[in-house]
Image (cartoon, rainbow, N blue to C red; front, side, top):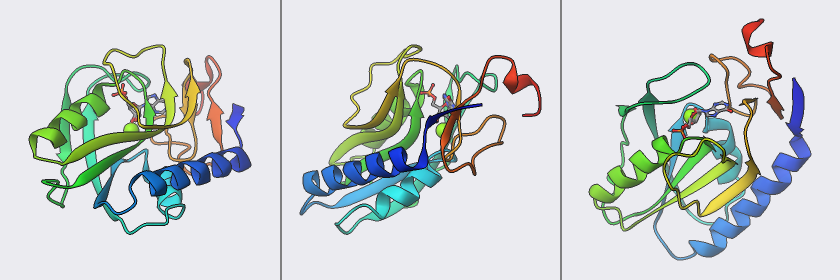
Length: 176
Ligand code: IMP
Ligand code: MG
């Protein structure tokens, strides 16, 4: 595994994103929606970088595909508990790849009457994008590769790593 973003780099970027979000949402009714499971580490650090009152909720979406690609249909397997109607919702995602998950959730939250829906991703992985996304906040941009750590998993492994690593070709087949 090759380290792509170390702990200090991530912490500095998350702090900057927190300041930007705090400035943009000042005086508004912010509902942060973390997309499980991958966003739990990022969201935990991001909320502590905010200087405004927020409500935190979670949603879980399953998309069918192989371990390293998400393809096909999205279904909600754990829904929001908060009512998004009339709220300013910020979706918090670990990584945008095809874009299907975020596109699906943005559309769903709008349909449920959210006042505004925006997306905040730690990593924008661009090469396999299928759905156009308007990402209001992006931590890092990478073209491709399979990343693990800081919440990101390969087959449920590696989420606990404090930095972000790229799995090298063939590595995913070994002990993951
Ligand atoms: P999308 O719907 O294709 O944009 O997929 C987004 C989801 O796929 C993310 O929430 C991750 O769960 C997963 N994913 C995509 N790329 C990676 C990666 O490099 N590492 C870990 N998970 C990934
Ligand atoms: Mg995910």
